[in-house]
Amino acid sequence: MWATDYTPDESWRLVDWCVRRGADEFGLSFVGAPYLRGTAWAEADALLAPFRRRIASRGDRWRITGESLSVLRELMPGGLFAFDASVPGALDPTIFRGGQALLAVASREGWGVLELADEDAESLRRSGLVVRDHGHGR
Image 1 (cartoon, rainbow, N blue to C red):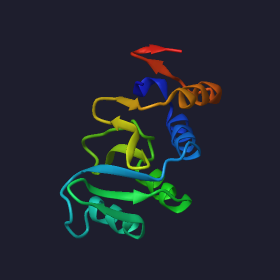
Image 2: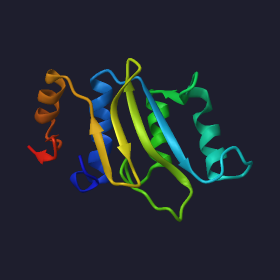
Image 3: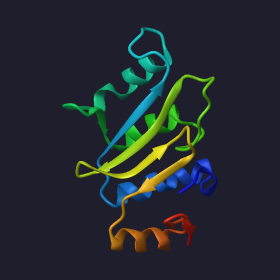
Image 4: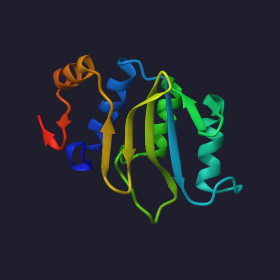
């Protein structure tokens, strides 16, 4: 999928769809210096702290709850695909289901990948969100 496929609101509909399909965690990257007091990264880390799950050798992941998704929306007001190098903040969200990536977004590059089972693809098509198979929209 491409950033141009989704408005910010549609990207959040995509997250909601992932949750309905069993997504239970998400991961993020951040622009800016990590763990420095008073930075956007440190503020985001504090907001997400109650939901943190450390995954050895894989960094931090956060449990998906209504509250953690509200924080994610606050951290990414332009949607999943938005990226502005001049503004410190979150990017490259990955949504996990059972430890496996369901949706991975490369914010800087403006694309994302869904790992779909057949029944997921059909459900996504019914949702009205864009589905691409090897680069072709349908």
